[in-house]
Image (spheres, rainbow, N blue to C red):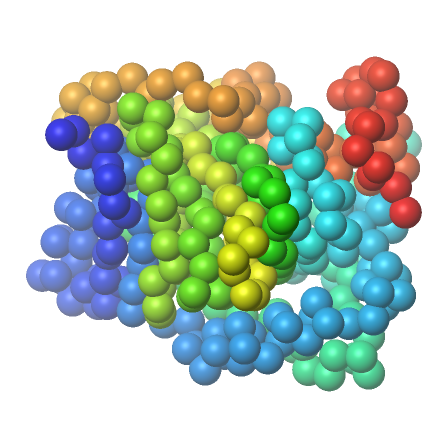
Length: 368
């Protein structure tokens, strides 16, 4: 069976990168995963385990347990940056409702950007997050920002390992993140138990070069990745690991060497006793003016040969982020977020909304 028709998700041990001898083993394993699977578990990372435990077992349940009026104070429609709280059923994937409740947070942007006439509207996608009041959830903002800083550092270091695995200098992919004015995106998500079969998140690709996912409910399956035959393969929670997958932007700039893998999340079935929680972190903050289609990397011949041995990636029902083929990263990000959150687009980007939804707001009750 071809590795690209994987039946399980491989686990890589990050601690191997600390020693030059074992690092070579890690790089070899990573090369195979990048090209053939597009998904992996990463164990033994430097992210503080006590911090993760407190986030999973204390902060997340308390966050979703906030009074509804406090959640609504942070509703995403308030934010031109697509950051804040979304009630159940307020996000779309391919026009279908995702049955999840969530909070979206960004990194590194504490102040609103003042746009001048003529500035591209996508410059406004970066901005400050909406956090709960300190009195309502003491210590949450400080804890979560610490977590995001640690994961961001890990993602930056991991991207250099990806470059090495592709036979490129370690700093090759840094060129897409040169400006300081950038923002990575994270979510804290609750998938409630459903009485009927519903998508937690529909089949899609990620746009970010890297996604680091903390599966915060170890008793719940739900995440699935799609192999070359189109089969859906479970990616069950695994203690003390992150799940990493690669996005369309990285697939584009590496001439299709890196595999962006279609994936989805199924809502917990009726016989589940508790909801599923997850915390995805998207290393998405590329320079807004980068054009991925004009930044394709010259790949080593031996790496291109491995890509060709894998075979052509199939067409799937996941079609998002195709705009990377012809637009700057900032606009691609704006369009992707607008498709998922039409209520935010209608309020803050009416021209984009009209282009994407010429018949008006999708009929799924997306208003409050």
